[in-house]
Image (cartoon, rainbow, N blue to C red; front, top):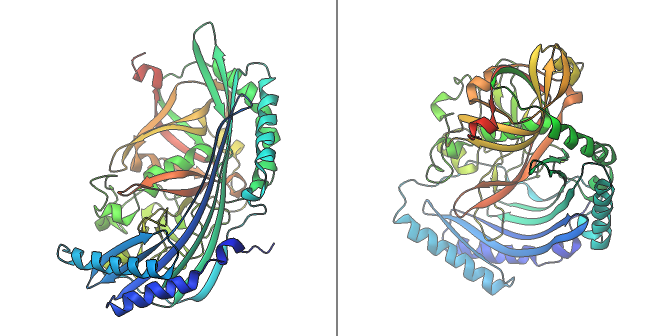
Length: 503
């Protein structure tokens, strides 16, 4: 299917505005400059018990000019799309760089990147969600909500759909001009059962991950919604009657719907090189995976192979070129359990003499400066013919099968953590033996990944992720995916969350 960037975006005076900005900064002596113009459309729909609870639409547009002048960054942004305003903002960016030079203790230099000329890229989707009427969207969510409310044990239903259309134009003084469009959607349904006798409640949420797809994802392309929604009532009933876990050491079989978040927190953030070098220390923390350990740190077991990837089809962090004009790619972060790479932008790549950037610069708004952001960080499955989820479970005598994400906690160095989930199943003698409640697994990052014994085959692989990864000051959010197979970990510490809370 041939996809094109929205013609209402390409009809804007993109190139003439870029020319005005870049010529201005050239005349003022900038060593490097880039111009970025964006339009971001966003919609959030949420229904509670089949009635509209939230309907929010936003449409943000604007432009930014970023320069390197005399070895210092300068940045300025605006919203009026006319040449005079663009030239004024460009002059302001150079003025900021000149002021910064008086305080700058570290000269800014960028890693080399080829010029790509005038290129474009559009993400993989079939139906732009903004081409679908609100009536049709609400009708779908309401029908699914009513069907669930009719089921035994379901007292409340929350259904939502979050959609984003991101159009971005970029041009720099090196000769790269990119025009790109990304579509992403995040549908979710949660059922709640209220225990009127005990005064408590239990919830069960769909496992369908957010995806770089269009509205077709909500109607059955890429996910079997009918099958998953049909299971929710019985799952929440079983969870309500399940026994509380006995704390101790267990073997874990972890479903991709849970493990993606552990990957995000313990690998994704830990291998951002700006963070490992201390540039996020005063806000988001640092990393135990420091630069001196590159090629040395034993991150996990031999079966652990993790990649950074900004090219994966339907990935939330997938793009053709990043916000520094770098062609996106896939590369190794952990190979056979050893730390072998980091996520980079052009400045950090040059600073540590690592060659090219791997395309991790991103700004979440036309009014924000690009910062180093996470790629789709994913754990590779076994080769074709590798074990199924049932195969992995069959190799466990006493353990727990973990499904779906929920709460999490990790320290500022990305080392000590604990994670919970949507549901947990006791494993006895290689078979599932009913649900458990109040489960959290706890470990250090290297102990946890060191206990990884086996990864499932490609048939168990799922691309999970989130819309709301936070970083930087002022704060920015980014959407990112994490793929992984079902996995088997040996001897992991399990906490009882109720007892840990003192209840």
